[in-house]
Length: 172
Image 1: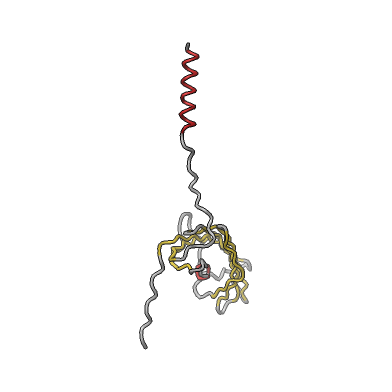
Image 2: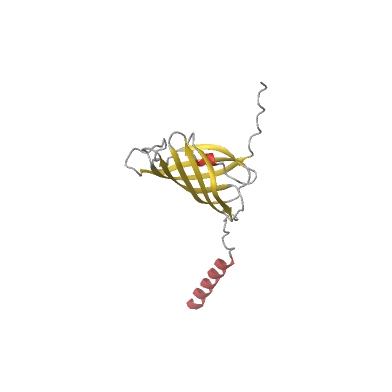
């Protein structure tokens, strides 16, 4: 009799467990482009190292564990393109040389010029959804003088709303 009662109790427990709805996977669908709007970007410098045994010619420093290097807000264009400014240091002029953003994957390359220094290359590899992205950015410099370096950063962005309306320019 005990065996029958224990068997029924186990069968009831198993039936109750299997009747529960399976857990939902909350994986956001892969996007074909970032949704236009204002994004808040968080930049964390993971590593900086000299490639010519001199002091790296960058103002960016490695972040302490859990520390963010900087937060900035920029607008993503109507076509979903990310402004190269997010990947550049102040004063750098960057132009895209290769861009791939499809199916939730991004692979971008920027050629940059730092006035009075020389050339830099920015390689961006990451993932995105319609409203956010996270990427590793690998920077290599090719300066005419000292200060060449290799740097790795993690940049993440989250859409925070529509871009602010353009302010009218004052009459001159």
